[in-house]
Every structure is written in C-alpha cells, then in structure tokens.
Amino acid sequence: MKALITILIPGAMLLGALSPSPALAEPVSADPASAAVSFDDLNLNDPADRSILQRRVRAAAQEVCGTGYSFDLRGRNQARECVALTVQSVALPQPSALASAE
Image (tube, rainbow, N blue to C red; front, side, top):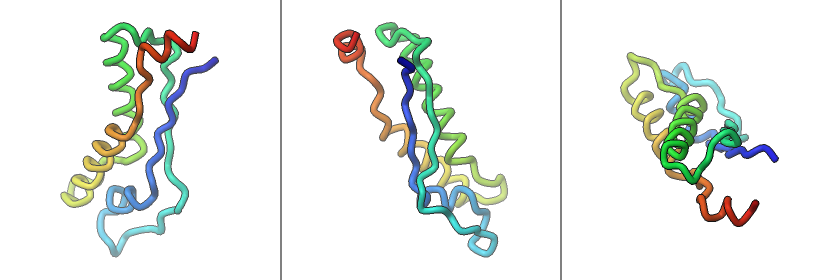
C-alpha cells in the first residue's frame, strides 16, 4: 500500500498568490489545486522521519500555492498565507494509528 497525503488548496486561495495584479489576473478554476506527498519510505515513529514528512508537506504546499512575484508584496504575502494555512490543515498520520493499521 502506498502511503500518500493529498494536499488540496481551493482556487480562491490561489487567486492572489498567482497573479501579480488584478489587471493581469487570469481566471482561477473552481477545482482545488492538489499535490500528493509520499511517506511510504519513512518510519513515522522516528521523530527525524516525521520532520522529513513535515518538510515534504511544506514543499508541496509551496509548489501548489506558489511564491508570488518578487515585485508584488501583496501576492507574496498571500502565497505565504496559503502555505501556512495549507500546512496547518494537513492531518499528518499519527504513529499510534500507523501501528494499529499494520
């Protein structure tokens, strides 16, 4: 069984992060953006591996949320907020739940 976490980000959260200004904004799909994060190579009972998973989740959120353009402070702040909210919303598997599932 492949262990994956799917990160979903509603299109509305991406609107500001991906567009440098309202004049240049493109329509955003109502479908959420997503990324899959694999953790089948990690032992989540090990704190070091849990830290690796957290970094993977953050990297996936950054990939999906974007970073905003360097000249667009508002867009960069929205991208950072998108990443922070996304990382907070991801329910990481608990080691005790993994042990009982095996």
